Structures are given as C-alpha cells and as structure tokens.
Length: 167
Image (cartoon, rainbow, N blue to C red; front, side):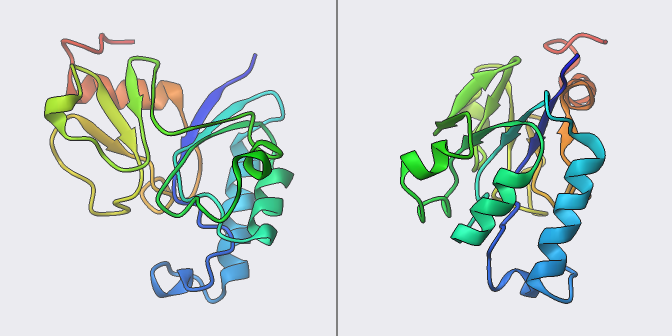
C-alpha cells in the first residue's frame, strides 16, 4: 500500500543555504534531506513537494534519484527549469492544488481564502502563520523528513476538529 507524504523547501543546489540551516556545507544539507527522505519514502509512495525544490541541474538530479512519485507545487524559486525539465522528474507540476481536504501551496494563503480547508504550505520556513488554518511543511520545520498524510490529518483535527473529524 502506498503512502502520501509532503515536504517543502528542500533547496537542493541552493549555494547559500548553509547561511540559513545548520549544516557545514551545501552537500551535507542535501545528503541529510536525501537520507531522511529515504528513511520514510518507498518507490510506490507519492510525495508532494510544495515548492523551492531545486535550484540547479545537480539539485534536480538529486530530486530525481529519490524514491517515490513526486508532484511539484511550484514555489518562488522553482523558475530555473522549464516545465518539461521539471516533468522529467515530477509526475506533475502545479501552481496550487486542493487535495485531501487541504489547500496545497508553496506560500501560505490568507485564511479568509481557505474556504474551510487548512493550507499545507512551505515558504515561510520557521515563521509560519499561527492561525489555526495553516500547517507548514518546510524542511526545517518537519526535521528535514517528509511528513505523511495521516500525521497531517491528525494535526488538522487538533487545529479544526469540526472540519477534520477524529481519525
């Protein structure tokens, strides 16, 4: 049985990432995320990458080498590649998506636009909105490890129990 996972802001190939994250080198940063990914994701799993996935061709190759089918919800830094290049790694490339009773986006959407759905997002890293309508899956927020759908549904129930029933 396949699982569904989420992660944002992997920043593979981002030359300046170590200014923002606790790694000695960019390579150590990438290797750590790749190791954490492989600990939880199998080949038949689905992973939603909510933006800022890869900055360079080398970063794109790192993403391609990871297990799972991957869907990219584009972020503000996902402009180094054409859609065709991204589709060589990702099953689909989207800008914004409603799925599993969630809004999936890179940047958080305003809670007045949520229409009763919690927004799963990245972009804000550790400065995510604390509204009760947002769950941030930026890599550093989720210990650099893709987070599974069941865990997100449990978090959603804690935030909005009337809309997200107990599991």
